[in-house]
Image (cartoon, rainbow, N blue to C red; front, side, top):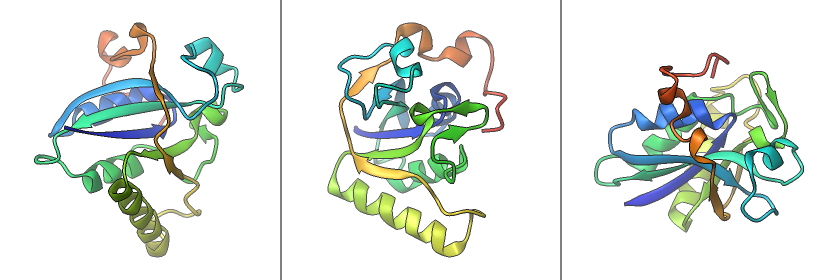
Length: 158
């Protein structure tokens, strides 16, 4: 099992998207990249803790590669937006890849550069690529939030 951590706006829809990927063993929503230890959702929503809403994906590298997870990441949100996804605005909604090792860093940077070179998006990719920071699991009511409500995705467009 390996871990991948991505921030791509509101974590509810991103979690549901990654759960559908064959080879993904588990997905947890939480917070990463900030300065407050063990922040709450209310604290993160103030946009003052420095955390991003993220998903931490546990996956079987024998069944799904990191490159495939990156492709899901690039297509499930607008990576050209710095601190915004759909109606959600603030640094907690930033596009970010938290890499867990040198291979993930190299793959993420190569993937981003390749997409920029191909002109896949109309604007330059704003996604940050940074070392994995402590991951704080979000409150239980956020885990599988959409599934608990009978929804399959968010209606924000991403």
